Length: 210
Length: 210
DNA sequence: ATTATTTGTAAGTATTATTTGAAATATATT
DNA sequence: AATATATTTCAAATAATACTTACAAATAAT
Image (tube, rainbow over all chains, first blue to last red; front, side):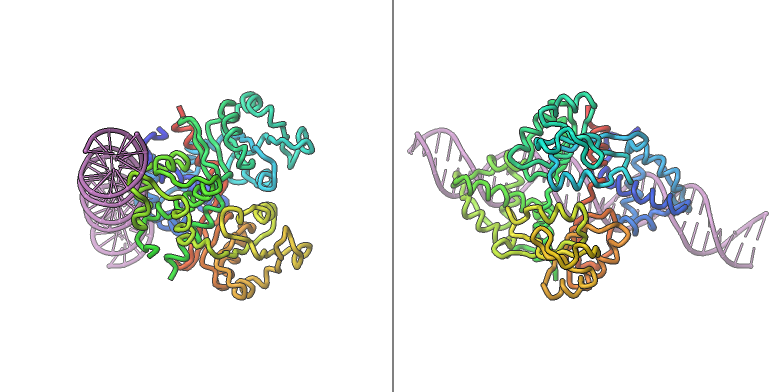
């Protein structure tokens, strides 16, 4: 059912919808129209209807969408009924910040293991997460069945650590390093390149701002 | 010259090219072909040539692109000859990590001011950056001519602080909160939504991974 | 002079977004 | 109750955007 053939662009919007539906649910709202939703999540209402309709007819004409129904549906689609464990590799400044980041709040995610080379933190608990020595990476990922990692290591070692993670069975990498990682084609990399984001922003402001 | 009509998708790739050109320059490489570049930045070589050609004929047939020429060109395009100051609002965990983040390394960017409500850090220097009380936000942004902010505040106050920043003359916001900010149409928001990225990654792994 | 390389761009394909209107439902009116 | 009007989804058609393929033209290397 969770179609193979929904557009990439749609898939990327699903978590946004999901989050806002949770908020609606919490405020006790029963129903929502695509127009209302559009304003909140800033996606055109027609795009929303198109997106939803890839999964069948979820709404009622003249009524809108039932919040709880929709929420339950997305919960399944986005695998939110069960907890997904991810690992964080590289407990530096950014790594620490992410350990504290409350992924669990509106996604059923949690960082269940961290890895680093620093003897001062290896084999301790940092922000509630056990830190393993990097040597155990591949082995631990395999044991703990972790399929997704957050990569916050120095650029120089990014590729070699990614390689090791992949050999440990990882299928997805949230990559905070500026390196464009080379991975097998069944592994997905999502780049979060902060310098890049800022430069793009500035470029658009300089060239398209009036 | 810096065309109005280049595709959005192209503009987003410019910083990626720029960064890699810097690396090439540092290693002393004189020339580069689109094919070689393609492998490094993981963008199809034809796409690269197409992207470059929006800015004129930057390469030489049978030769490739001169690294230094190209670098100088992109430096202008991306406004990297002069330093761009940005402000960071919300010096929590993530905020601190970003203050330490070396934007300056491969972008000519720096965080020159930070804002927070916490009396313990207000009017001190954190990680080399002065922290101002949030009350001075609009006024300081205006005085320091800061056009871009990084927003790392709690969700509840995100919109109101964004409003204030906009009234202080801000034109671009790198938004780390999950809130979809409402801003005037001449203001650009770039969302960095970490929960979102992770959920999307997991969605793709679950549904498209073999 | 010949061959190999490499750009630049046109044409074709694919993906994504927008517009439009019919069908279904809800709400208001008589 | 019955009818009319407004709302809203869903799907099809269209438009816009982005990517890929292919190759002629230019240059470099031999």
